[in-house]
Length: 354
Image (tube, rainbow, N blue to C red; front, side):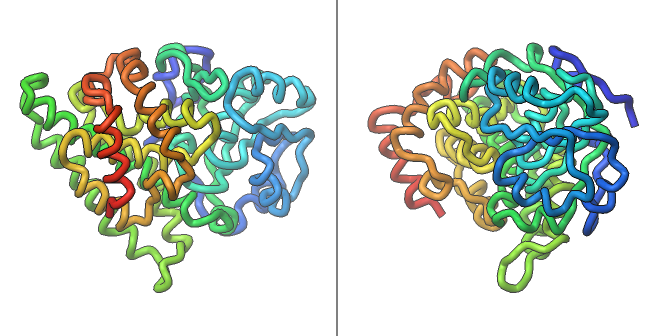
């Protein structure tokens, strides 16, 4: 395993996901927290109400975060005492990314305890710069803070609503939008022919996820410890299995930025990514396969299901062209804005999708 790195820029240097140590089991938080040194808990209000029953040793201080705005994170950091030896991040993606900020500012080691396996934040040391609900700058300007290991406590994670966990699969399958865009761009003469061997490898991985995940569920469709472990392992494997090419820009995943900026509140990351990918595939003329996959894995993506209003999605798509262009992404969302009657068609499609 490679060494742990950290820094206030060059976030692309974070440790590869494949090298992250993930510990799985029942009762892990109670067992391991007995030996934790003095620690600071960085968490969300709801997450901490669940976690506090599991820890055997209480923290020196608790930093409750509401959003990833750096002014807010700095205030949370300053509110925490300086007599701790470690930071523990408890919660979903927002709390886990916030814990990386606190650990970096406090110059302390970090461990992560997800309360839902919903996002790549669990296995990535990089975290974005945020001003309010807007992402600032490219990944080269973002910080990173590698962590010692991740504790996936089945009992804790299974307390979360099912859709928070299946959102993790949305964060995987959303990358299919890159394949759809490359095919479109090649057809338009704006990209070379698709590398079908590489595309087939990625698609086979997505198909294996879609085929295997439902087999982990109980007969009533509820999640099991096997389901949790399966999602977490798939999230970890995603980076090495997705199609990596500048011709496959992954704009579906990137749509999480404009959506959150437009909504001005935190929505579930994997669900936003799933919606973004469906939109990209719709614009590329091939949304049906992705929708079938998401439905099969119980991933929510319809605006009404994920709590996104029509005007908010319309605003997100207005923001998308500049957002994508600022990141150098050759995507249909930058070339062909979805507005006016075209947005009406998209909204009607999403309303009846699946």
